Image (cartoon, rainbow, N blue to C red; front, side, top):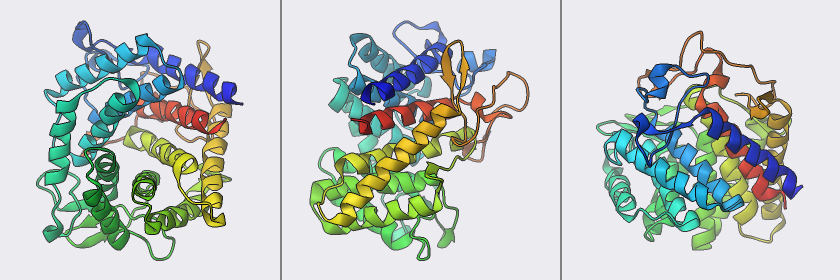
Length: 365
């Protein structure tokens, strides 16, 4: 079983490598993901910049390096980080969720792949720590000069701060803020956020994922039972409300292409690291594991194969649609990227499939 998922993860990596990885502007020692396949010249020239998609691509490269350490992949990780800095003209931008995702990936690159970037981590840490504004109702905001405090910013920022530089107290404050402010009393799912005092009641898969990750990190590091209890409650809610026959629900392409895989990544973290021998914690780990493996099996079964390599569906319980270069392209609207006409064209969807295969591999021992 372990080898099966290793092979599937390797195939997903090969598909991204072949279709999406390219030097930035032809510069030696660089690499980024072209955000659409089939691509157009605009995409191949990196005229379109989706900061957080590239952060997740980097995270998947690190997953692959943990699964199968290769000197050549370590070089790719270094090139991806370097090109990110060049294309973005620095580490920071106006979106705290973006910066949190990059911080998480770079922290893992140092800890797990031996690619250390201490200055990048300090810069990003300072941004996330200084964004904390309880006096305005937060949490940290979604972006600079904004009054929208949401789970997609506070969740990953909290996970990073729990792992980096011993910022556990702030990470706990962020987790407590989410628990006090954003939990739906009926379903126990996480609402999207709070805007100028009003609840934004949308419930996205990745909001659940990042809160699972944050509470699991804190359960491991603090041994405080309140965090384990929140994980247990949220795993049960995700299984009930966010899966279809045990498969995580999809959210289409564009930014939504990454939502289900982020949930899978942190469910896998729950399955492998949530502490506690009590029956309810054993059950939470088993449920988390089952959701990831069922999702991965379904996504694999519903893939298309192009040139011998997988092309994943945006919806893991439906057959993937082969994309073309025609039709509406993904575009950036009001701080989010909408889907291409065929969502499978978006790199986010394909990185998501890869992330899921890597998550399944961590559970298939």
